[in-house]
Image (cartoon, rainbow, N blue to C red; front, side, top):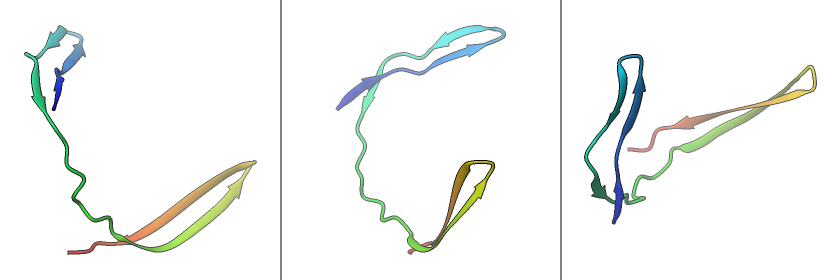
Length: 55
């Protein structure tokens, strides 16, 4: 269990929520990778990947 709070910095001022607690469970299966593409432009390598959503 982790305790957290949300802090928002806005033009109207800063706002903080009351502390809360919770946890995360990693039980979501990622999609299946369908392809990987790499491009080189001006010395920068960019990778793009596609997924098929698994139901």
